[in-house]
Structure formats: C-alpha cells, structure tokens
Length: 105
Image (tube, rainbow, N blue to C red):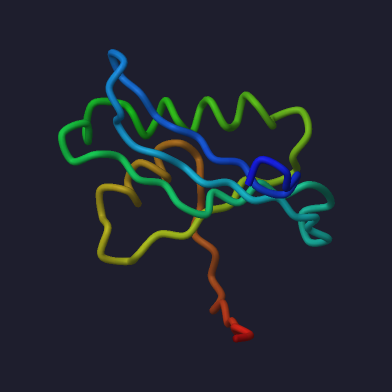
C-alpha cells in the first residue's frame, strides 16, 4: 500500500493502544465533480465503540481531505444500526440506488 497513491491505511489508537483501523481508497467522481475518498473499511474495536472513536476518525479523514475532496463515501451493512446512526449524525446520507459489481478472477 505504501507505494500506491490510491490507497491509504490508518491505525486508530487511544492511549497508545490499538482501537481499530480504516482503509481508504481514492477515485475521481464525475457525479460529485472531483476527488472521492472511499472509506473502504472502518473497524472500531468492540471495547472502544460508543466512545467517540468513530466520530474522531471521520473528523480526521474529513480534515485531511476536506479541501481536496468533493465527496466522502462509505458503505455500511443495513444490519449495523449503530454505524448508520453515527454516519447520519456526521452528515452522511443514504444513497437510493443499488450498487452492482463484477469481480475479475
């Protein structure tokens, strides 16, 4: 990942202990009209959930790319209600369309 400008890994720490991680990727969005920062994976340790770690992570990422990106995007499982509440509280809105994918082996 270190040599790929389209990827970035972040380690989340609290009091010098690992609290989670995030993986970011970057693309150009014609729909948004600029750089799109995709929060590909966000993981917060169960012991740290509900303590503001996720909010701090989103604020950090938005601060890092706020002047450069036109959109921040992430995916969340419909069953992950706590994460959905966090994202909506942080200003993220649901997209009302189905995403499809084709993986190439």
